[in-house]
Length: 122
Image (cartoon, rainbow, N blue to C red; front, side, top):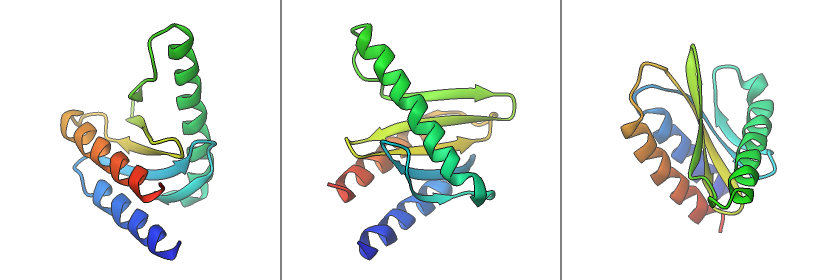
């Protein structure tokens, strides 16, 4: 398990290096924090829990409407964007980004990281 945690830390560290990423975290589907890289570490557990709740609600809404499971949710606010992506049946990845940064590279890197996290936890 220690090796897995080290690999998750490395994955998050690489994700944090993507331009515009201010914070990132890995969490279980039920909102338990696995690991995080955030300036305000004291809020990382609630950050993970609220993000899991939002993704779960989005999944319920889209499946009830017959549209399938969403690839991601993006919350846009005045001072930042929050992106939550599923990483298999056990986990999710969350990033907080600068609002002025384009989403292209970040979404690409986030999808690759989510696939790696899914493999680590399988």
